[in-house]
Amino acid sequence: MEEKYRKIIEAILIAIGLYLILGLFDLITGPTYIITAIALVFVIYCIWVFPVADRRFSGEKKTEPPGKARKGTKFYRTHMWDLLLFLSITLIIFIAVHFFVLYMHEFSHSFAAYFFGAKENPLDIIWGRGIFGVHCDENVDYQTLFDAGKGTTAATIAFAGPFSNILLFFITAVLLSLKAVKSRKWVYHTVFWVSGITFIMIFEYVFTRSFMTHDDFGNIEHGLGLSPYALFIPGTILGLIGLWYILTVLVPGHFRIVTPGDISKQYITVTVLSFAFFLLYIGVRILAYPAVPEWWAGCAGIAALFILPLIASPRRRWMREKTGK
Image 1 (tube, helix red, strand yellow):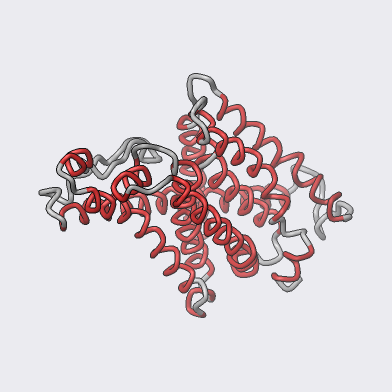
Image 2 (cartoon, rainbow, N blue to C red):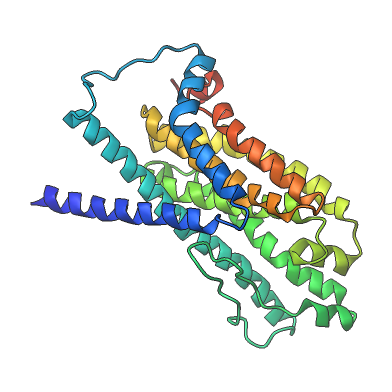
């Protein structure tokens, strides 16, 4: 009976995962369908091209797992069910964590505005819509602050959101180093995605929005009289260091703790990470064409989308060394 209920719960999780996949594709479907086409190409790449190219790049021959038979056998059905369940759980955690980090970011702005007397109700934000919280906003009137000569106050409020991301990233880095977290794989899995999402939200701001005249960084630059390069150059350098830390420390840790010895699930982790980082957050900026350099940042994201899985593949020698294989 317990096995029956477990399968029902797993089926519900998979159904939710499939719904989220459809929701994400609906989110990235635009008038030009460019992002949708790229996403479909990436899915094909992940299923058929990446594993083959990765094996050849590693000099490995394809091997069949012990006891595996033809398609249609119980082993094959069980294996695919397990992979689909892992993907679904990952997507559910990803969406839940995205909303958590998104609202933390917006409420950080809003409470800062309340503290400085620029807003009467800190809970009054624009909540956004859809499974990704599109058009969510802190609902702060920055222009009134600028008109009143309170540029520094406006910049401080604008910085409150990114600062909360930076703080959370360091907190999660510490949590992921704790034995109590490492000993609980699903806790590690969740904190891993909190760390990744809070990082990419701030890196995306630096990399794609530093030259905007509005938004967080535009308001910071306007309020303090800074050049966009004053934030873009050091921010991008620090962001690349953060990305290096995620790929060389957190991803190997995830492979070792959450999916040890299961290269298929490790592939899912690295490809979902690449999809989230470089398509959902950065790659979509190609739709900003002809705004420069925003759409160029989107092009760089699309290129990284296909490159990162190969760089951070569990088959890389440096990755195997870090995971103890």
